[in-house]
Length: 268
Image 1 (cartoon, rainbow, N blue to C red):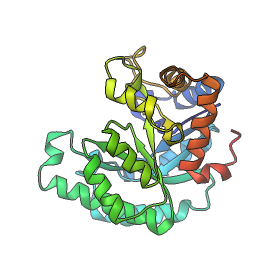
Image 2: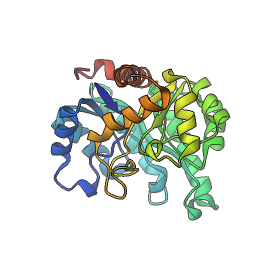
Image 3: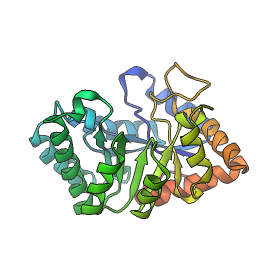
């Protein structure tokens, strides 16, 4: 069995097919799909979708790409949404949150400062509610680590990890797991593949980031959560392990990264 620790199942690219795609993933052995929110506009939708499809859970947060259009009042609404979701067994954490310094406009003041403010405030929510985080870390690993050292959170996942060996090990030392997905399947992604092969297996979880980051065999088509087993097979080959061992390990790692999965009621 497998866990997709990061999938935007509510994305517009999927149209009305979200439930079908979740079912196809379940038939492929993906027992749990984690759906992160991206902004105030989909806080309610991710929870509703998780309840509808039957093999999904959700997280609540404001994605850095949506920070420019967000208001400070949205953070207060996020706090209220988190508090209201605590009794929902399908609610597992805070995300997708983080920093994005790949998009040129976002790494220049004042948007850089706004991103960091929203990130720090959401880390405080994770700390205050004792919840793990789903982190967006694109071209921002060192700054994110600076904030994580200052505002300690109870674990989580550095999603779509693509950093250095030292950065990877620092995230792990701070209690985070590292998400690997479609990028790992490209033969030219040498650094990502080396990390996937050499980091402790206990630090790795699998993800699709669907509809984005399609694996090599799907590119440039959109990604879907049923691709997790084949992505897991690539990880198994990189590490020289049986696929079943990688499935068991990454599922256990997902449980460790997102402890509320254990009380979600899902069978995995």
